[in-house]
Length: 397
Image 1: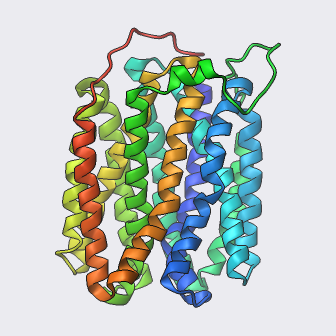
Image 2: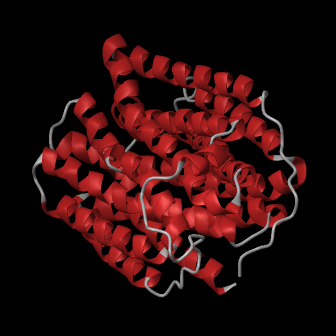
């Protein structure tokens, strides 16, 4: 259907822009601003600072007004944030720019998940979300691959100029979305605050557990693999920035694979079983990063780590969408993504603190061990869930 394909195009552009700066950001802050490790962690966390507080009200708003206007506002913030990152030489202005950029991206990703989930029935929802997010990640993969080359050839600051241009293209693409996704009656006052009745429909065991899963997995993804690993790989192991960009690209290929596998098979084998499989792969791959030190073995571990994240990212929102009624699905997804952003905010600071406290190569290794322990905890928590088989819903056209 037209709206689904438009969301895929917009998402791919947005992820392409994000992928252009993600692999080079932490090393860029470390060298360009001569920042200590904890300040690097704060700069990475800055992207999630305002985003964490934006997801929930954006989810509420999308249930009431439909997606179009919040999507446009979010892309404008992304353009502004990317351009400030290109121009500034002040670390605090960089953190501010990443914060408003993150708030803009919150609008797209929260509304994108919600809107796509409303376009399909429960029987097809996992596949639709999996394909939607897998294609987005293809855009991220292309951005990471090309971005590493641009940074090596022209300097990492040029990546932010290129990203500004891509953000403008993404802004243009969302303006043609119809956005007939509002469930609010026309005579109801628009509000960012949900009613008690709406929250009662949202807060159930499945949603709460899925939120905890997202919190922990994002702590691992941004703290270990977005902040600690690039510095560990380039400073301790001795890999080049270009090689690290290839590692991130391998992780993204894994994420694409995980989204497709998780989304499609979770409709057939159950959301719970796919999440457990993803956690096993994740624990093994992160432990592998403490064992292997060569480029190619780490490349394999990063691919497997990507499969872990792709399964979680593809299956968990479908789990939530199954567990809440259609009219409050934006609130459910907004709650879920708020916890994800909280993990993105806490993870870099927490993991960099562990490394600094222990010190040296040992500090890096123990931070990976901590990540494995967190995943093992998620396995126990997920075992308490049940797959919900609901009655077929009418898809929105």
